[in-house]
Length: 385
Ligand code: MG
Image 1: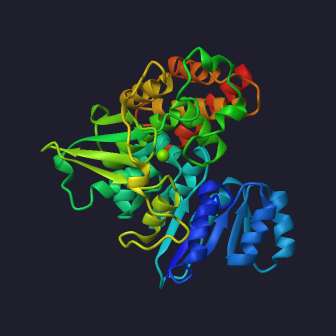
Image 2: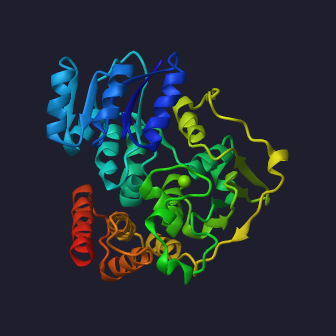
């Protein structure tokens, strides 16, 4: 029996994780979780899974919950996330922290979980983009497993099973192209939020769906792969693959390529991390029917059409605090777009300006990273909000 601590339980990854726990009550037990502001859904989760500890964003919601669930541990705010990640569990059974939070708020609880010696399944890519060096060094120091819950990185991880990392020649990350893949740059001037939120293959949260449309999501994933697999940016390629069936590939020194295929269902990478090194049936997920699919298409990435991806490579190569500034400006820009305050193309403009204005800091610690992160976000809000 594995004890599960789930950060971000009411989001897209969170609810799919709960589905896996629900179907495998013999393998997993939800002991603690956090959520943002969907108290209605959180209440249902508490009634169904009976966790011992819950944390929410606002102190007000925490009070309301405490009045209903009098003997359950409750916390709130950013500290509440850390308390959830480090919540004291039964030492007899293994524990896994699943970080399904959205955005930079995921960094601190990831570090806290690692420092308390817990394995982490990471769906929060911002953690690695903001502080990849610190996070991976801490994971090594504490001897914990840092497992990706992103379809591409789970694919890369699975392609590397039993392989010598020295024999990798490159990684190839696939990209569907997102909701606007058939539009030209001209067409993009008048697209709406509703159109942007309509992803052709994947059902995901709003922020990541917009990131897919700008291709920033792929950029964040390239940076994530750089830190997870210790590969140079020149050896991490991206390729357009509209069907989202090949989730990523690894090419080895003998030119062999190993690919991971599957349906576009996030439950596959979530369950792989939860069961690792084992595998188990997922339940209500249908198998891939290749004959029915008939074909798989690939096309070279177009960096002029998707400048956000080019900026992510640029920030990654520059290193220092550039990737986190890229992420902070993008997070704020996407929030402004979702709020209807800026156009779709303004997102890339905002990220470009933030990178140009930033003077990178080498070897920044967590506090400094979080400070710069806040400053960049405030700057974007003041100027564009
Ligand atoms: Mg992905």
